[in-house]
Length: 218
Image (cartoon, rainbow, N blue to C red; front, side, top):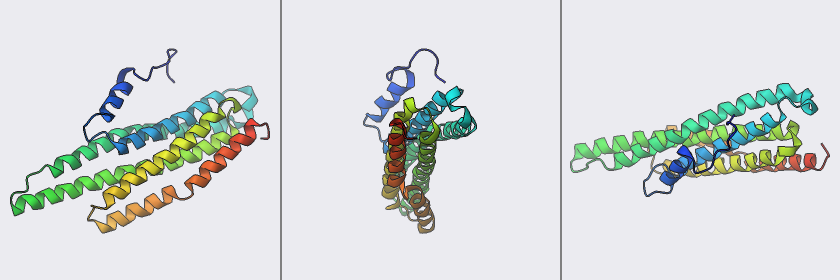
């Protein structure tokens, strides 16, 4: 966990990364921001788990809480890695489009590089959506058994998880428009469909659980 001093949003890499996001550079962009949003969701699930961990009042759910915490921390780590992976993939797309295209050979090489870069740039947000879907499930699980005093953070995690999936899906659909590999594109669409299916319902169920528990009904 973070040390005793609370970290300000402008400290170290956070403020620097947000400055980069707000700049005129093509990366980081929306895909990386989606991954960051997912990492925030996972971190909030971990927070609720840690507020529940070791509390005598929640002694009967400690094993489940630890399982959720392990999963949310794994998801957080993967999503943080995908922040840079997305930015890196998009930089490669931008570089590929800048390749020379004066001759037939140059155009063919440029097109090949663009397609390679687009494949990577599309793979990453699909992974982001898939992991965020797992985080949504974790948010619901911790909402069911976690410390009542921080359940609003589980609800926030659910909203952030849904935003992550929607934003990642938007980036996938945009990239698929120019991806020529139809077989790979179809496979990615199937994975994305599985990640997005029933997301709103899952979030609503989580919010209902939180409402019931905070009102002392569960």
